[in-house]
Image (tube, rainbow, N blue to C red; front, side):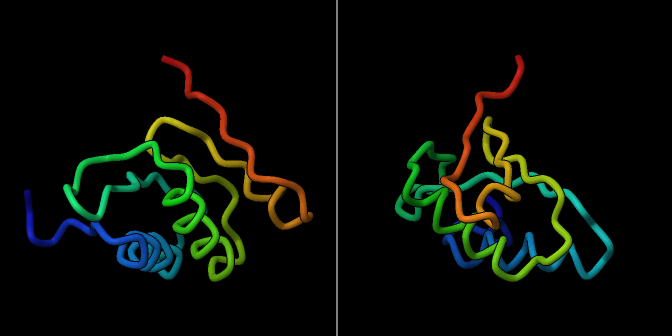
Length: 88
């Protein structure tokens, strides 16, 4: 595993937000288990990363996490986070 790979939730969010400074409107991330570095479906970790990204990236229009699409506008409107299994 590369030492440059973001593993901790804050590292993953920071890297995603940094892409917005380069003009990105959509991000694809893999939330990882901090202990193993492997991608994880842990909803609590996903929410931590997504909430951090959403609070700092004003013009984000889409976020693809692991194998789920996150609909961020729903979070901004005070509704619950929506996770949807991606098409295969």
